[in-house]
Length: 179
Image (cartoon, rainbow, N blue to C red; front, top):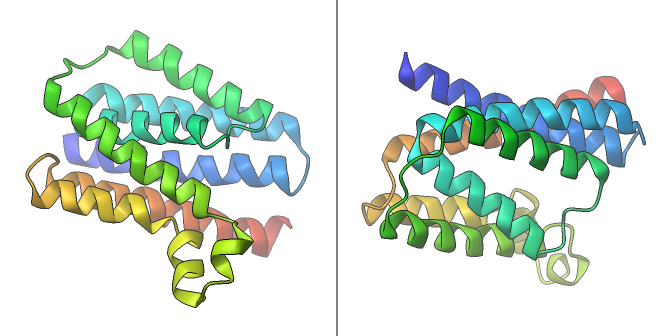
């Protein structure tokens, strides 16, 4: 049951994250974007409250996006607020030195992804880099390396792929049925 709840939390977090961004960026529908962002924040907090690896990954994404200056809408603020409030209410995990190191390493991967995503200067350098950053592969590689070095569980990589898969499903559905 634990694995199912965690996998669904990652999946629904990615799904609602993409829908929130697209409603804000493509449809200028602030209310829907905020609502979907809040739902994303709640599922993210649920994952983080039950799994330290999820905490490391999602806090790293949050910090990485802040440092990369990608928090650029009220929907992002609503998502962060719902995440932080729900995470505190659900209970914070016990951090260790290794989990802090893991957060920092994942944060670097998240920042690289955000700085490379939608960056025409990087996309001009070739199709590989365009695809790599379009699908934000730096953090995936970082998480896989952390699994290989024993700092994250292999399931964490699989759950993160669920998150990314849901993100792409939401992109497809939005472009096909909403745009």
